[in-house]
Length: 339
Picture 1: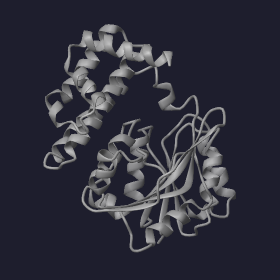
Picture 2 (picture 1 turned 30 degrees about the vertical axis):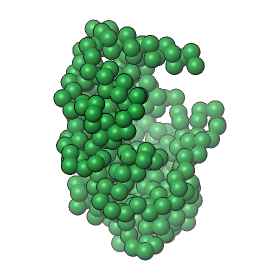
Picture 3 (picture 1 turned 135 degrees about the vertical axis):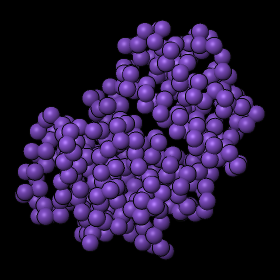
């Protein structure tokens, strides 16, 4: 039995998959199952994968699962959760790169003074022009009910919403039924909110274990100024899920902090709708009203924590009629562009 399963989805990543896969196969840690999930792309990504697997000394440790058709990134994560043979599960994307000691570092931290629900490494963001930005955690063990939520929501400590670059105890994911929305392109937000709520013990490391590459044709890059009906639907589902979580935090002193975070996220969605170049003004009104209606009866300014002017303003904006929202958001955009 393998100690770790490393899962990588593959979908139309021919220019990048060799770098990603070799960084996985060249790990210093021995006991790894490499689980490749083929999400049925239209380029030659899987041809590249099969060639590398056939030639690499660790090819015998690679298992390929083929989806019957393209389902989406969230579904590839779920396939890995259901099919992993290791005790621990690590996700990486097929256009990123992990350091040679990534799994060794995370596994060692996992084993020190007993396993935890997950261990998260720090990472570097590689921008299009090659500039590197480091996102480093303080090295810390967080233990206790809602302890991680306290750090993230109340004290606003840095915590990456990405599913990747974390070594999860597989039984923790199974026991709490932690899965992604299968057809989502933006699966990280909901999954990570679930993780934060359910975890009782985790570790954050200051060791960089992953390089996250920005690329101009990535899904998130393309969606910045052009939203589809599917994108809007996903935002609706994410905010609906956050509403459910608000109910779970109702007896916790964290509810006000999570409410503020949810309001900021919802305002961010309205900004994206307003910025989208392929949606008419009338459609923007319809979509924005629908988004806001999901959360409207939960918005209570007195409950906001911290009770900052910015949080209060966002809450008020979500409460006012759309024509006023639209003007204020456009003013915000204009002021931001002048900076």
